[in-house]
Length: 334
Ligand SMILES: NC(=O)c1ccc[n+]([C@@H]2O[C@H](COP(=O)([O-])OP(=O)(O)OC[C@H]3O[C@@H](n4cnc5c(N)ncnc54)[C@H](O)[C@@H]3O)[C@@H](O)[C@H]2O)c1
Image (cartoon, rainbow, N blue to C red; front, side):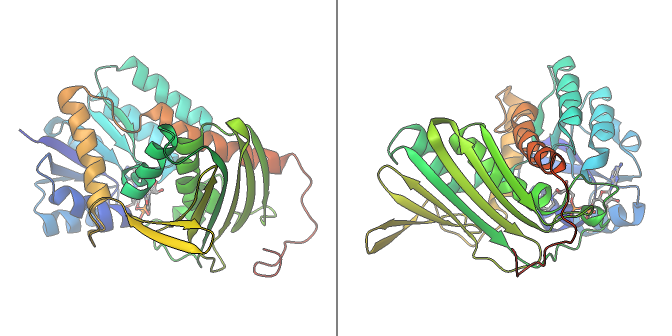
């Protein structure tokens, strides 16, 4: 029998990715949709023939085995605590929570409920190109990493239903925790926990839109990240190792350019398909497998906490310095 899943939070990410992905998997069935804005849950339920809807998890908990939490992060702790109290397995979107303290509280809840799967959704872990880098660095076939450069920027256009990601009252920061957490998670996965942080952003009391971050990793690996919510940057992750130079187009699931001298060879990792939902389906099926077989999910709560810890270290280092008198102008300074 497939896993009976409730999706909690029926905003843009659920509409665009999780619901259509889940509808294509035989490993699970979405049997309930939950959102305090009931109309949003009802509209999606009608579109995908989901039997139950509720304003809160308590309304549907008896009819499901597991929950996918796609709420804004500030309510994660309350929602996950409620899920565990109902004996439900949990897969929770990124960032696992807004703060390390909340992530640790979530971990404590998970530890108190060892029979329940507690997984974090970091979907880039399911991108074949990112895994290929991970595996090649781990087994040494790509050489030893030396340096990485991440460039990621676009005028912000994600139209979340709640607008939470630009509401200072609800989030600890802007582009870094919202979008930057993806490349940070990849770097942590590839290189280990960061040992040094040099962080700058353009916020003067609000949420940062531009970030310049330098990280040091074990073994002397250095990374430089440039991220923007206001400017268009080239979307790329470059990695230099002792034996090669790799360029990953940030939003290509399969492509990696291997650059050496004047030559550039494009490698396609895995089956190159236009199927944008494939990683989300793989993530859901990894979770369903963990529930069914007791296997460890790709990203547990502890693993998902690492990126939040790094983000928090960046914000802490910023708070330790005096603010500039004037905000730098995006595009000029950044
Ligand atoms: N992996 C990715 O690439 C990716 C992309 C976008 C968003 N996300 C993550 O998905 C999450 C949701 O983002 P979004 O853009 O869909 O936001 P959204 O605002 O569009 O949707 C959030 C929904 O949660 C509902 N909600 C609020 N409080 C709730 C509660 N207590 N219980 C149940 N539902 C509640 C809101 O009413 C809203 O419908 C965020 O954590 C975000 O970081 C991940």
